[in-house]
Amino acid sequence: MSDTVRLAVIIGSVREGRFGPVVASWFAEQARGHGGYEIEVIDLADVTLPHELPAISPMIDPNPPRPEGMAGLTRGLDRADAVVVVTPDMNRSYPASLKTAVDWHFSQWDRKAIGFVGYSGASGGLLAIEHLRQVFNELGADTIREYVSFPRYFELFDADGTLRDPAHPESAAEKMLNQLHWWASTLTAARESVPAA
Image (tube, rainbow, N blue to C red; front, side):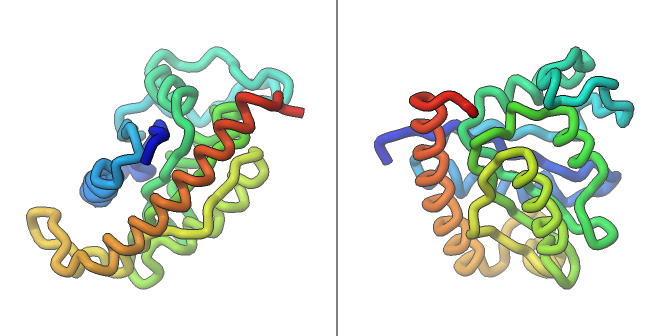
């Protein structure tokens, strides 16, 4: 690939004993192997995420004062051409930590390509992904069709975090990364040439 896409990989779960870092590490390795990405992994467990949002709507003030502990997240999202969210299902949706991180930002999502890697029991994170598509659509982001899903993830990875049978997930990741690269490159060029309406 000739154009390098700056990719932020977000670990969405902050719960004790979470599996997200294992999945995110695997995906980041796939993205590095792709050759078209500069990768930054952002772990929401390392971010200050207060649930009390600013009083003024982000449509009026898209960049309000944020907690100092959120600065790294905001910088990472500002730099990113594309974002991949690594998320489990949580009560048939996605984690509250992820919603809080999304809601504290606004312009950072606008006209950017978003991809998903899901993991959970039966659904493999697809319930979370479907809800997130609606949220990011409202924020002006473009969610791509391809995704990676790990149903019954605890049977798919060994104790060292290595996939027992990597062929299908690696193929899914390659398709997703190819699609994400095209969309991110296209949207980045558009953002640079045409101001937001």
